[in-house]
Length: 380
Image (cartoon, rainbow, N blue to C red; front, side, top):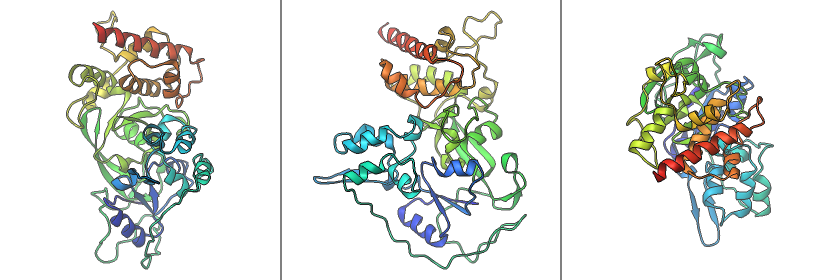
């Protein structure tokens, strides 16, 4: 598998023409599920996230032009007045984490049976425009065990997100198959990090846990259903299991290990906002050593927790703890953007996080407690 990262629509069309079997990936909410469960192994993944026009929309006098990668959450937040039916339909799609990544174009392109926005498009008699791809003569060679076909002649396609190319043994869940590896540079908890020997089909979750030693984000369903792997990608909660590792190149990730420092720094230096990518944060070594201890510990090892973490302890919202990291990340993002949330706001923000131990009441109590404390601190 090769990972193609075109920077423009023209490069994407050229890449698709050169590699007709390339599978486009944007939100990844369908494609990554198939890869995670080994149901699909495309020769090429064509990442569309760098193409800005696909994530843009334009409101005209008589029509709205909607980019194929505009996420459902943006339709709900910014186009409710212009596209009320589509905004309501978008709200029925999965969870907040999925809506932050998935889009109408992706569901249309994959013919997803879970495309809840399709009826709204049909009812409004919407038109779908697609560019024509002029196909080149495809290279029909296939990789055999232990080797990768060599490129023919000079490569004129889009830049690839890899520095090293070669057939290497897979490790972890993909052992025993040949693959192409790449290096991914991105920001984790405010610090620039580099992940080597990454297979193109690996998820961000696998990279964080197995390659960077950050096990806080939990691996449970691998299909975006449970929310246990929730992290913030450029400030937005997403399921790390549905983000291809190559898609985080140059982007910023916050995990539960960096939540305390992130919250403290946000309060001190960026009230009401977040940190610039790579400017500050938690070192990787510090994040690996992080443990959740209450601030009133008697061992001398107590560390300061994020307000939401302390609230979870004080409200008794933690039982087995498996779902807790994802809940913490989602709740922290809610309180950053909605300092005084209603119960409906809290339930909506946590609707993508499943807990099999509790009745959720203690979890809701914890978020209410953190919000109340946050309000008191703001007034003092």
